[in-house]
Image (cartoon, rainbow, N blue to C red; front, top):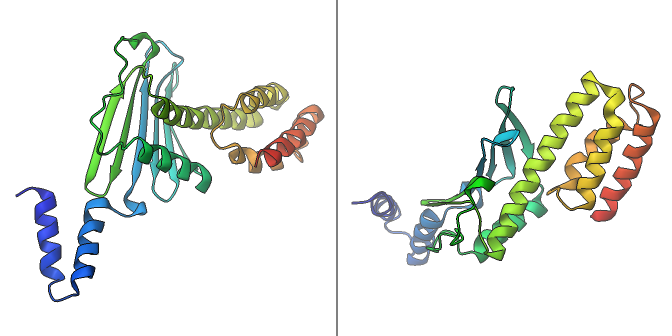
Length: 226
């Protein structure tokens, strides 16, 4: 007997005597899982890149973890929180792809392994599926990949900004120019993620005035984007 049959059988035994509708709904919940049971994983690897390994893990409640490895640096792990808006977007794309039930590989017929290899895994209750590819022409999957890439870009930028702020504040104006370009290019998945950092920065006299003024403008840009 597989795990699903055993789990379902145990549940029906426990719920014996309850109304039929209650038993059916409980059985469906075991198979599908609740939103809290959902997890998403994105993993990218290309040994030729400066950031050679990147992993994004997101739980159903929005808690996230970003793990990455840069050349000449130890592996780093950062915790973050995904906004409800972005979490809903990820879930919607996964649903539109019928990710857990589809058998599509998503790999393009041509090999583009020089671009790096990515894996996406979704787990929902007892269901789990992972696909690996280096390039896809599926538009919905490309949108999902862009969301995950946007998360890696934003968390990398926050890491760099925080490092510069504590070790080389005179270089903060350059970091803010990078951030502005990424925001304009819509390469940031969750712009609101930068709000608290920028609020602190605009009042931090250890960084140049030009950076503090730029932080104010970027906050206004993020607020308008909502």
